[in-house]
Amino acid sequence: MRSWDAEGCSSSADLDAARDVCRSLDIVLHTVDLSKEYWLRVFEPLLAEYVQGRTPNPDIECNSLIKFDCLCAHIDHKVKLSGANWWLATGHYARTARLRRSSLLLRPADANKDQTFFLARIPQHALQRSLFPLAHLTKHHVRRLARLLNLPNADRKDSQGLCFVSPAHSRFANFLHEYIPNNPGDIITTDGQKIGTHNGIWHGTIGEKSHCYVTNHRWFIVAKDPVNNTIIVGKGWDNPLLLARRIFAAHWKFVDEIPRPPGTRIPNLHVQIRHREHAGYANVLILQDGKAVVELESRIRAAAPGQTVVVWDDDMCIASGIIESAY
Image (tube, rainbow, N blue to C red; front, side):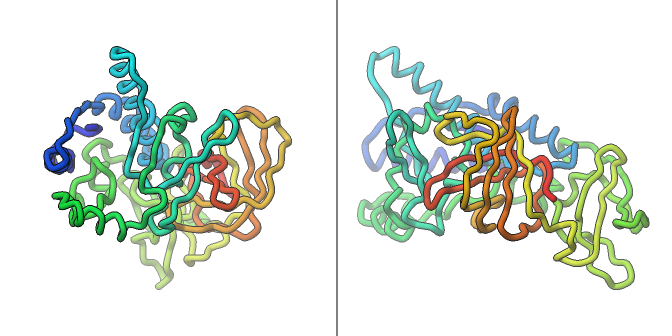
C-alpha cells in the first residue's frame, strides 16, 4: 500500500523490500496506490488542524481512515469479484479476541512495541477481519525467525517517524512550512507581556520549551490563541497551566462501536495521550453528542487540543477521543 507520493519518502525502499521478501517466499505481490485518499482524508485535514494551533496525530488517522478503511474496501472489492473470503494480516504489535459479535483490541506480548494506541480508532468491521500474527512475539523473536528463514529484510531498520517527512527535514515545522505560509504573530507571557515573535502558531507544541530567553527563565508553551495568532508561554516545565486533572474530548469512539448512554461512568481506566507515555488512571463520564470527560486520578502534563486520548481496561483498549480542552 502506498499512501504518500512525494520525493524523500520511504515508499520506494519499502516496495523494494516487499518485492525481495515475496520473491524469497515465492508469493505474489499486489500493490495499491492510496496516496490520493491519504492526501484528501488525512493530510489536508492535518494541515487545517495545525493552522488552528491544534496537535493532530496523523498515524492514528492513517490507520483508521486509510489502512483499515480504504485498503479494506479495496481488498473487499477485489475479493468479491472472485467470490472468496479474506483477512487482513499486518505487522502491528497488537492482539484481538472475540466477544459475542465484537472484536476486542488487546495489548501484545511485547509491551515495548505495543501499537494499540495507534489502532484505537480503526473501524470495528475492519478489526473483525484483521489478523496480528506478531501478537505473542517480541521484536527480538521476530528478527530471529526472519534470520532463520533467510528473509532479506531480517536486519532492516524499524520504520520510525511520519511517512511523509523525509530525513532532509531536521524539524517537523520545516516540513509544514512547505505547505503552510508564514503567519507571523506574537509570543506573550501569561500576564500579557510580549517577549518574542513566531512565524506561525504551528511552530511548537503545547508543553514544548520556547526559544524565547527572558530574565534567565525557562519558558514553555502553555496555550495557543488562533483568533489573535499568539503563542502563550509560562515559566517552568511544571507550570500549573500545563497540568490538568480533566480532559474534555469530542468524537468519542468505543472500539466495539456500541454506544453508551449519556451519564454512563466507566471507572479505573488506564489513560494515554502519547505513545509509550503512561498517564495513570481515570474515570470516564460519557456525555451527549459523542463527547466525554476523562477525570484523572493525578495530573497529566501538556494535554493539547487535537491530540488523541486513549483508555484501556487492563490490557483491553476500550475507547478514544479527540482532546478539545484540558483543565
